[in-house]
Length: 383
Image 1 (tube, rainbow, N blue to C red):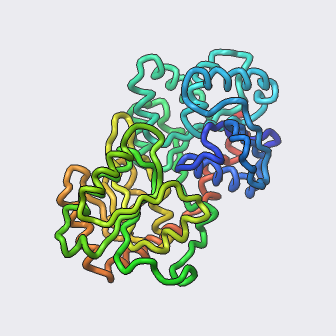
Image 2: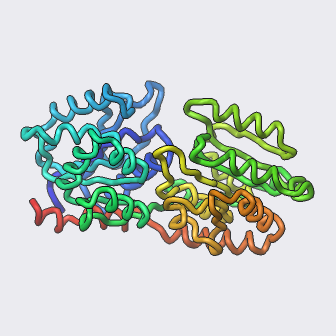
Image 3: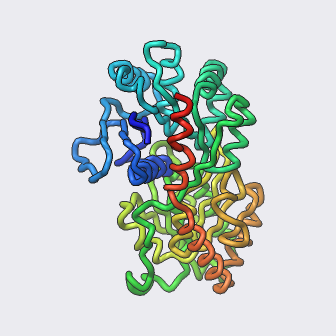
């Protein structure tokens, strides 16, 4: 094993939630379990946050963890301050926030880590490429990276198409389940369902890219006899904008039972999944943002839920159409309603898709991803 540490630089770490935060935390845990010397340098946490116990060193940095210039500057100052230590480290940029900082620092010869690793999740590829000032900086950072990872083949192709410099450096590090849901709660352990209706569940921040509006519209378009059989539950809140208000108004106008459950803590999500019958996350294209994978699809599958989604971005690598769920075009709302009708009317299909989704979700593991990205002999040979 290399003596120098692997330093994860991230703005998306506990208590932040979401796909990237989950990816970071699970990769850190897996790397530690494999015997790597690991450190996490992350954004500051709120004053009342109790840190989780962890088998690695955690350094909280004096920055909020946004992508704005002030945050980039604060991170740059921290990295320059500790440049002698970082010079003999492998610095892993897990998401776009720290990448933006390193794009500027890479011109300073005094600051040059031994190795730099990168992970791209999807949307940042388009944003970096479309910005004429950022694009050449990203190209330079990619050229100097020792290794690059993506979660899906879709994101890998997207990266190579927009930044050919990455070709030959990219490995796939697939996502897996959060540690907390490796053994999901079942309906048997939580008692009987709280409702006799079928529950369609969406878990994710309330945002146009997540497609809650499209799911709601598809359910509202079902025949009255099917609408009477279902409820639509939404877990999540909006960070900004009036999208949550838009959803509330649409729900009030729909002849449908809709429940907004708000921000449910991770440790309580298992009970919500256990009450559900169908999971829906109908991601949409939104500005420069795309769905690169979606760890929540695996989480729903682990709880035995059939999934309905849009065949967009890397979703088809998280949900296998006609095997673990049903995928339709995001441009065909009638097909989305038909997919819901099909699962509502066919309990055997729901069970078969859910069982296959659970089996597939439990096959994935984080240690394989870490082994692909951090092979010690390969990095040592490039020292």
